[in-house]
Amino acid sequence: MAYVQSVDRGFFPLDEELELLPGILTPYGHECLVRLSGWMPFGEAAEIMAEFMRIRVGRSLCQRYTEEAGEIYEQMQNQEVERLEKKMPVAPAGAEKMQISADGAMVPLLHGKWEEVRTLVIGEVQPARLEKGEWVVHTRKLSYFSRKITAQEFTRLALVEIQRRGVENASQVAAVMDGADWEQGFIDHHCPNATRILDFPHAGEHISAIGEFLFGEGTPEMKQWTAQRLHQLKHDGPSELLNEIRGLQTQNPEAQVISGNLAYLEKREQQMQYPQFQAQGWPIGSGIVESGNKLVVEARLKGSGMHWADAHVNPMLAIRNMICSDRWKEDWPKIAALLRKQKAEKRHKLFSSRQNQDKPAPAPFMTLPNTPLNPIVPQKKDNPWKKFKFGHALYKRPDIAKK
Image (cartoon, rainbow, N blue to C red; front, side, top):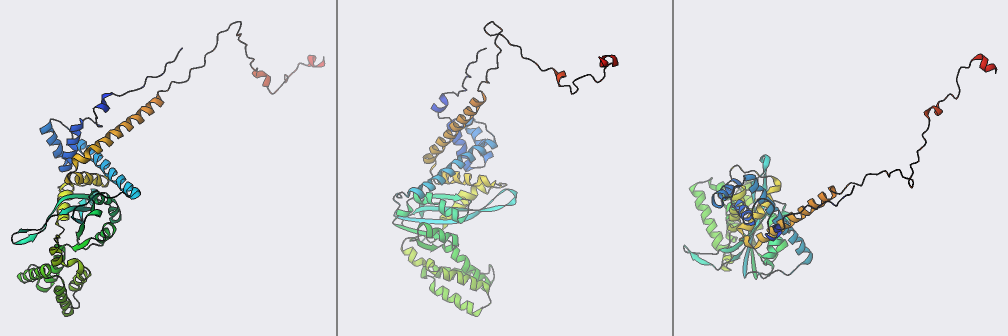
């Protein structure tokens, strides 16, 4: 009997030539599905695909394809951070004036849990223009970086967006944020020379709390007092206002509302020089990150009835960042290339495992025929009676015994 080598299992050769992605969709259909799922709930994305592209897919397929793409994009950015830390390349040229703002928003997870998602927004500051009788500064060309991780790890991984936007080489940078300690540590790490500005509405919350204590919540007197102090802070600076609050603390030494908010504002006095900041052409509010929390994070991850598995949050945030930063055309081809690479690696692994399973079994032992040249020599077999423990009969006839 003869044996032949097993035939290799192959794949259609046009798969790679057509740049097909893993799954059942064409490359364009795959891209459209992920992009739609980044904008809207998975069920609605499936309906849009069926109505406009005549491609019928299920909600679970939308979710799987989108999260796979988001996971790859997240890995790409993490690997880029490792490369930047190792190689330390020169950052590209930044804009003339740039603003960075960071903040957090809560998103719902499974089993009733809520976790904070941190977001960094970077933009280019435009020249001030007159709107409704006041000079207003806008920040354009916004880009986003969001992750559900610790503040320390967020500060490290945000390097990928800081480097890409050339913040290091910008002529001037302003960091407009609230007073959270992790945000100040973020500024210390990435741009310690930036102009630090306390978000004006955030400062107003602390002044309003004092007004509520003095006149009652929501009263006309409270609203009038707060409005006058905010106008004073915006146009004259914090010095006179802080002196007034110190006097209120003296009159109400046991009022924790006054002493606590006063301590907060005194610690950030240099970040409340709003007349100076406005004269320099800086925005005094962190509205870009507040809107980023709503439009980038909450609009997609905080919908009605949504509860996310922990492992799926960052992949979705990565897709949202890419879409809202207008980098789809730039970065999707990179994601598609890695999807095809993963497909090829999986195919190769499957092929190798099958090849090992299909190895022919060794040929069975074959007995040669009995010929004069190859005589069969019978083997001697042991007689089991020879091992009998008694060598002779136990009984002998008497007459035989005498002989």
